[in-house]
Image 1 (spheres, rainbow, N blue to C red):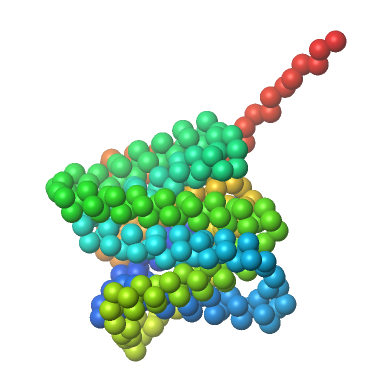
Image 2: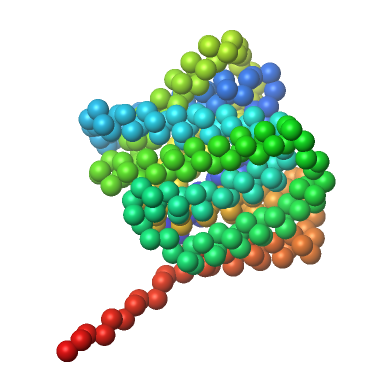
Length: 297
């Protein structure tokens, strides 16, 4: 079951970049993200209501959902979208993949979970592999004030993502399932995005064409309803640090799709990087050997 959820998350989130590119046009980024999560929240609430699976929450649960919505369905997306204006997508992918390390550190700080050596080593290999995969793009990018700002925003987006992972894990420990907490979190995230648009004077435009509507539906339902539910279920089952290795594999899926859609060509360094990413994946999910304790007489 965990493997199916893991592969599903990687395949869905590894293809959402196509829909995100199709979203770019007349509609402001913040408005598009608000539409996405408002629709996703409506779909989740409808599913839960008609199936009778909507869980009740107290004020504490609602408060955590509010903060989770701010971190996971609002601020992190704004940070990544804004950062993409100043730094290449490859660099954003490398920074985002550090979520594995941040989740391990945060799980240690907040839940006292031991940081497994194989997870850290696997994450390091994954980062090195992504560096090789995107090396031409990274090497050709010139450092500037805007670049540093973009890197800072991408790092902030990753930290917000990690914080959302911790909050989801906390909710699941309290018995609340990701379907319910995502429904509320996405609703709160959409409302906060609407508020940001109103305060900043961002217009609520909408493109009534197959390109925009189709990409919005893909991002809202497979990308959000299915993708976030599958991923956050893994966070509860496997731990935040192992589940976050998905972020290393997303760019690999995207590059393979780019071979057919954009003519991407694999090179020797890129293939080496792919090998490191796969090796890191094996290390992250390797079960630690049981420690035998000798009984004393």
